Image 1 (spheres, one colour):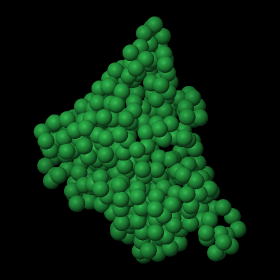
Image 2: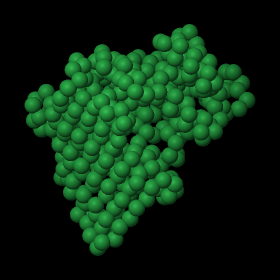
Image 3: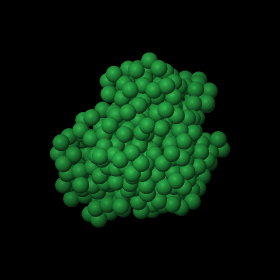
Image 4: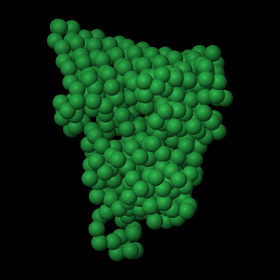
Length: 367
């Protein structure tokens, strides 16, 4: 795995290990990543930012320390690593341009509007050998890392079932203000692809490989091709069964909320909150446990490869030229499940089987 910074030291005689980081796209998610880098004190050089909306790029620049540039090409020519934070339909083109220049790439989820494009992107970064990471940030969530540990504990027994509920106000409004998510050409589809690909990834990370799915969708908001409700049944390779309900509504008091219940033979686990829990569990002998906030973070920090901050982990991998995690290949596995769910919905909810995952061990254990 190589990154451009290794070559630019030789060409430009760089005297330090500061990574020159640029952003394509300057919306809410780009701001999140910029803040995560700043909060951790990442030693980077903030170079350009490009957005089709010049005013948004300028606002991002004023807050972040990057400077707005006139084109994507100008940005890519002056950085070592790039964050791709545009609407989904642009991801493949930009990732391919960055990989062709040898840049480390952090691409937001979902990778693309189609499975075929997602697979092509993973193939491109592998072909050029560049450091790459997908924005499936819940991989580093203390809440889900603890849940995986509780599931893997032999005292819990086998997983029997999981119930996953995810609701969020439709993000074309409120503080998300992502009006493009109502445009099928840019977003590809709705709540399942654009939001609950996180949930599919977490089900795979915490429970295991998915063998078959069935799903139904509905579209109450009426945006063409943008479903706002999905109910899916999931069969895991172990034989466990699960359900996923994903909803985009108009209740602005509920920005993004998840609740997960995992039923094992001898343990019941409840996850509330995406990051700091709480996580509660009850065992067959009556013993109970509870972790939240700082205690949860301290308990799970050793379980996150490269730490809980996904952006610092990306920078470290880019500087070292080592594989970042999770890579685009892991993102493709989540896309495969999402694609199967959409095919099931098109068939009226019929079960759709999935072949074996290509990244199973690294998916769950990050090593």
